[in-house]
Image (tube, rainbow, N blue to C red):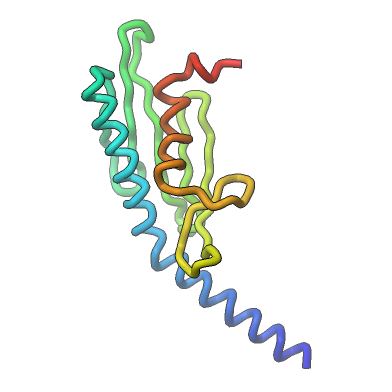
Amino acid sequence: MWIDNRLNEQKVLRERELLVRGHAPVLYDELWKQILESVNYAQKKAMSVGTNGSQEDRIVWMSSESMGERRELHIRLAGDRKTISASGPGIELRFDLDICDDGLLCLKNSNGVRASNEFAAEQVLDPFFFPELHAK
């Protein structure tokens, strides 16, 4: 009967939400580690960049004499643990957390396509580190 089908769908949805909520902080930490790796590399290339913030609001900063200011990029795990966002000057990105075909939690870009941590870190940091290359 259709009610049984809907009850099963409801059960699958609840299990999916529990899995996403339970593993979201781990994926958030893994993405942050990838971002830190890129920031450390940028520092070795004499770029004036660094990190700070809190567990809830992680910050990548960049300062430049030519810009005359310190800019900040905020990386946040949403309270509902369903998205990771990046916001800063000229940057508004969001990655959804979802269960992918292999049964593991993964990031998906705005088109619903799976995104590796490396790809997500580049998508977030490239326009922040090199805004002049993204000017339209």
